[in-house]
Length: 127
Image 1 (tube, helix red, strand yellow):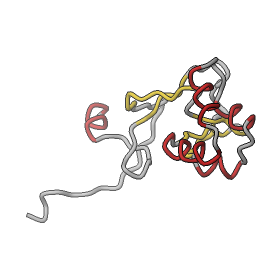
Image 2 (image 1 turned 90 degrees about the horizontal axis):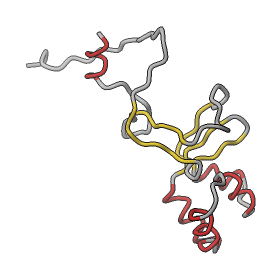
Image 3 (image 1 turned 30 degrees about the horizontal axis):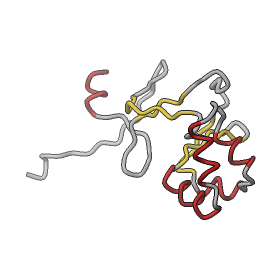
Image 4 (image 1 turned 120 degrees about the vertical axis):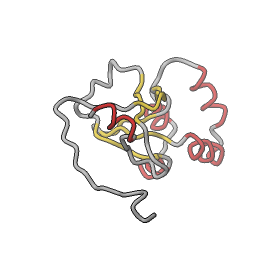
C-alpha cells in the first residue's frame, strides 16, 4: 500500500511561453503598478483600510466612474507605500508586459498559498 501514491520532484523546461489560466482576469481597478512591479490587491483588506480612512464614498465614486487605475486613486488619496503593500496579496515583474495598452491581467492557477502550479492533467496533456 505504500507504493500507491508516489511523489516526484521534477524540473520542466519549456521552449515556448506556458500559461495555465484560472479564468479570472484582474482589471485596472484591482491591481497596482509601482516601478515595473505589478501588485494584485486583496480587495477585502483594501475595503477595511478604506473604511478606517473614511474614504468609502470616494472609493465608490472611483469604482463607478471613469477608467482610472487603482494606483492613481490610492496616491491621490494619500495612501503610503506601506499601506499599499499591506493590502497587496502578491506581486510580479511587469517589465516585459505592455500594461499601458492592456485592459486586464489574466490570472494563472494557484495553490492555497497563492503559488502558481501546473495541474497534473495539463502535464499529462503536454506529454
